[in-house]
Amino acid sequence: MPTVRLHDKEFELFIPESEVHAAIDKLAGELRAKYQGKRPLFVGVLNGAFYFAAELVKRLDIECEITFVKVASYHGTRSTGRVSELIGLNEKLEGRHVVVLEDIVDTGNTVRHIMDSLLEHHPASVSIAALLFKPDAYKQDIPIEHVAVRIPNDFVVGSGLDHDGLGRNLPGIYRIINTHA
Ligand code: 5GP
Image (cartoon, rainbow, N blue to C red; front, side, top):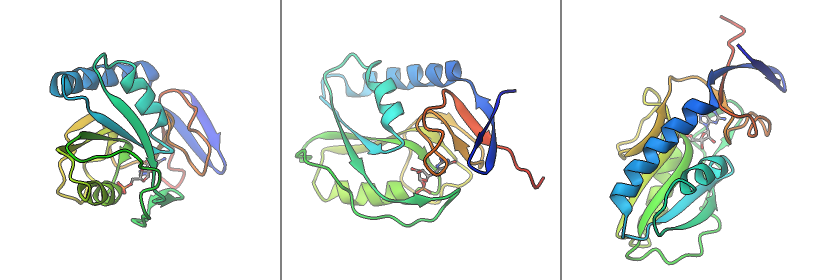
């Protein structure tokens, strides 16, 4: 089992890149069927969603737009629930079908904040698409309609996700090895 050290933590391969790609293939099929002819606006949440956004949109042979926003929401290895304003949204959302692209949905605090901000602009619809979803950690009632991979409540890196800046470039998903177990 390949392992990697990032700062002070050890991670092991959890989901190989081929499986991540297969899950994104399936998700792209869902989104194609739902948004064909609606010219959706995909809003990727930086930094983590850059990988997911690129892998997803290259599989979507429909008319669509893609943009990115940034929220400061997370430090270290546990979700803090702290969020700030949405930065970088210049598109008009009124009447648009918006699909938020998240690297990972954990407690859902970030999604709640993004959803509240986007709804102020009166889009026709907003849905969430996530590369990874931790159902056991989720505390919101917003449906996460489109999920590539559901994972247990472990800290993961790779495919865009980092541990204090490192690991975003790792292919596949790596899970933290609990050295206290
Ligand atoms: P939430 O607001 O849903 O609790 O957390 C969302 C954010 O927390 C994600 O966008 C991500 O930045 C961070 N996060 C939550 N779980 C993980 C994880 O397992 N690994 C990494 N790298 N980030 C995580």
